[in-house]
Image (cartoon, rainbow, N blue to C red; front, side, top):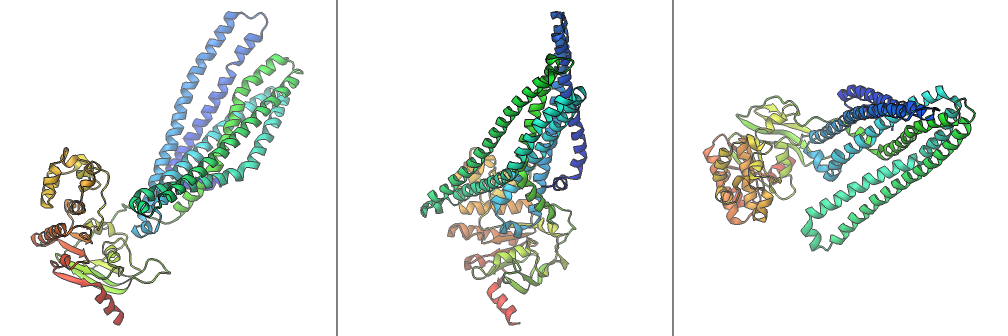
Length: 555
C-alpha cells in the first residue's frame, strides 16, 4: 500500500478538509503535551524541601483545572476527526454504489450481488475506519511522541537517547516480523466474511430447494467453516496484540532501569529527573501502543485500499446523470442490431431490425432461450448493442439520453419485486410516503382489482407487505406491478411473462385488464412477452422471434 493510493481514493473536498483535521491533531498533541508539563510544578512543589501542603494543593488545583479544560477541548477535536472519517465513509460508499449502478444491468447481472454489497458496505467501512482512522491516530500519537521526546532531549539528552534506543528497536522488530502476516490475515477475514454472507443469503433465498435436496447441512457447514475462519483470524490478531503488550512491559521495565541508572548522575538528582521522565512515560508508552495498534490495523485493512483503487480506476457513470430529452410520438425501432454478452460469447442477435408504433399492443413469442428478455432489455435501453442501435422517433438512444427514455417506461416482470414496505411505498416506488398522491393510488388499486382486498386489511394501504404475509398471491403481485407502472404514468408498458406464474382465472383477469388499458388509452404502447396463446390473443400484432431470426439468417 502506498500513500498516493490513499490520496487517490479521498475526494478532493475531503483532501482540503484533511488539512484542518491534521491541524486539529497537532493542536491535540500540543494540549496532551501541556497536560504533562502542567504537573511538573506540582512535582517540584512536592520534592521541594520545606514546601507547605497548602502550596502543593494550590498548584495541584490549578493543574487539575487545566486538565479538565484540556480534556473538553480534546473531546471536541476528537469529534471533529470522527465526523470527518465517517462522513468520508458515507461519501465513499455512495460513490461505489453509484459506480456499480452506473455500469448498468449487464454488469449487475454478471456480478455476484453479495460481493457488490460487501464492497459497498464492508470494504468502504474497513478503509475509512481501519486505514484512514488508524492513520490519523498514528499521526496524532507520532506528533505527541515527537514533541515530548524533543522536550526531553533538550532537558536531558542522554536519558532521552537511551529511551529511544529501547523503544525504537521494539517498534521496528514488531513491524518487520508481523507486517506481511497482518496483511494476509486481513485478506483472509474479508474473504471469509464475504463467503459467510453469501452462504446465509443463498440459504434463505433458496430455502425450499435446500430442504428438498437435503442440502441444508451442507450450506450451514459452509457458514460454520467461515465463522471458524473469522474466529481464527481474530484469535491470531488478538494474540499478536497480546505479544505486543508483553514486549511493551519489557520495554517499560528496561526504560525504568535505564532512567534510574542515568538520573543518578544528574544535577537534579534521581527524584526530579525520574519524576519528569515518569510523567512523560504516562504519555509516551500509550502513544507507542497506539502507534503499534494503528499500524497493525492498517496492515490488516490494506486489502480495502486495493479493492477501492480498482473500483475507482474503472470508468463508470453516476446512475442519475443529466439526460437529453427524448420525445415519443411515432415509433420505437431496432435497426441492424447485433448483441452478445461478451467477446467470447455467441451473438444473441445479428443484424436484427423491428419497429413498434406508438399506441400498438404487441405480443412477442418464441421458444425459451431465444432472447425475448434480452430483446426487452435492448428496447428499454438497459443493454447497448454492439452494432446498430435503438431509435425512438428516429433519435438514437445512447448513454446521454437513455435515462430520459427510461422515465417513460413501465416494466412488469414475471416475478415482480416487492420491497419491505407498505402498499403505498411499493406503488409510488422511490417516493417519500408523505409526497405520494394517495387518491391516485386508491383509484389505481380500484382499476387493477385490489382495492377490496387492501381496504379490508387493518391498516389499509399503509399495511406493510411483510405483514400481509403469504396472503399475497402471484396475481396480486402482478397487479401491484401494474399499479406501479400506472402510477408512474408510463407511455410504454413492458410485460415480461407477467402472467406465467398465476392461475388461469388470474391470467384471464390480468389479460382483460391490459386489453382494456390499451383500448381506453390510444397513446399507450403495450409490449408483451408470453408463451401462452391465450395471453397473446388480444394483441393487435405478434412478433414471432423464431421466424424473425430465421428470416435474418436467410438474408
